[in-house]
Each structure stands twice: as structure tokens, then as C-alpha cells.
Length: 163
Image (tube, rainbow, N blue to C red):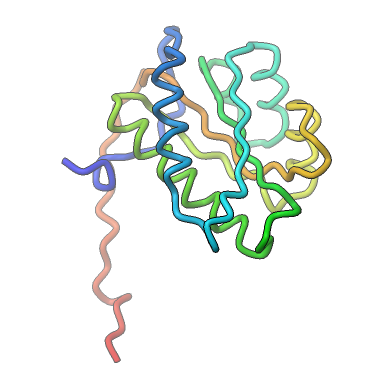
């Protein structure tokens, strides 16, 4: 089954590390995303460090699961890319690609929105020690799922308008 129809937000993880080669596969999927004018504005910060994960868990009230996750990828975009107005769209596509790849690999993941909330963005940027030319965008929390969820059917024909 396509990961589009299988992917769910997983917030509970087994106490089991995620191999660097799997993380590289996830990042490869992210970098395959299309971007405006092929600008590829992304940078990715990967951490397995418990201290960093705990610090990141405090950046957002929705990030508590980071304390018990084996891995996180913080995505960021460059301010000085060719089409900065499209950078967050480009990062959204990259994040979705990574999330879908996690599902294909049997990993559980959840996408935590960071941008456009300045306080959350600055918190991530400081924790990751990002260059001042970068803006934190989101966090993909990754691990081996310790919970099972079924995806909801979200198709609503009434929202389709043919003209």
C-alpha cells in the first residue's frame, strides 16, 4: 500500500536506535523534492543526542515526544535563496517526502511545525547552532514505532469543485 494512505503521526517510540544509513535514506528522499526554480533551499540538522533532543522538546508545547525519541531532523531554509517567498513551500515538500520515506522503511515519524512562529524558530536555530543565514522550519521526529495507528480516510467529495 502506498505510504500516502498509510502514513500516520507516531509520537511513541521503542528504545531502539535508528541506523545512520536509514536516516541517510530519509534525507535522500527529502532532497529529491522539487523546489521553485530548483533552488533547493534546504539544510538538515540530524541529532541522536539526548541533551539536544530534550532541549528541542522545550521549543514547542507539541514537542514533548522528543525526550523519548531516538532521532530528530531539524529542517531549515536559506534566507538568501533565489526565491525566498517559496522556501517554506519547498521545505514542506521535502518534509513530506521524508515522512513518507520513514513510513516505507517501517519507521514512525511525526512532523512538528516550527515556522512561522519566531520564538520556536529562534529556539531551534540556537539549539542547532545554525548559521544566521538559516531559518528553522520544522522537526521530523523519527523512531521505531511503539504504537499502532490506522490512518483516517480524509477524502471529502464535497470539497471538490469542478468548473
